[in-house]
Figure 1 (cartoon, helix red, strand yellow):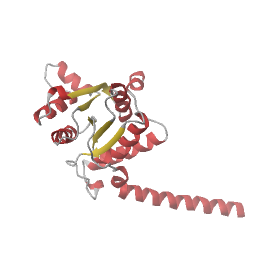
Figure 2: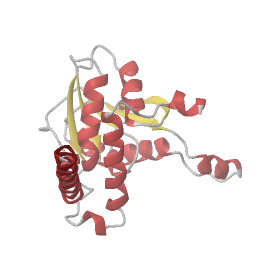
Figure 3: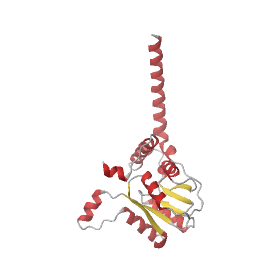
Figure 4: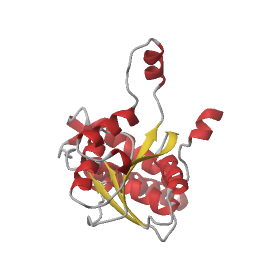
Length: 214
């Protein structure tokens, strides 16, 4: 009887702890996902695929003299875009729009380079950037969205050589709303980012080669 009572007490305590943890995660998820470094000059600015505010801010940093080179990811192409292009409609790929943004904001064409082909995840981008980096690049400014900064920093620091200094910054053009669960743009991003972070922490992630195999 005592064993059963002790077991029920343990289950109850774990349930309460789980509820409290879920509540903290729900209300403070953006703060937990957001972790930036002190901005300083580096050898290159690295733009991750995704939101278009990222190349906008990368161009700002280039113009302010934070780095002499911009390295931009070539993310995977949505099959719907390929279908539209097959119809003869000139719908640009994301990396083409990133290039146009950088050029429009004053980054010279010879200072823009791309890494990877059809990068499908943050880990994919980190591994492709690792293969792209030259010995001259010893520090990078990693530009992404604010709520992606913590996971991006973890992934890149675990993937790139330890002698590469990584400065993670979030674009200031994407604001983090206090009541994120009421914002139709922020809510799905936060939920997905929490899921991706937890998935990575237990040893999982997405790679282009694995996606093709499946």
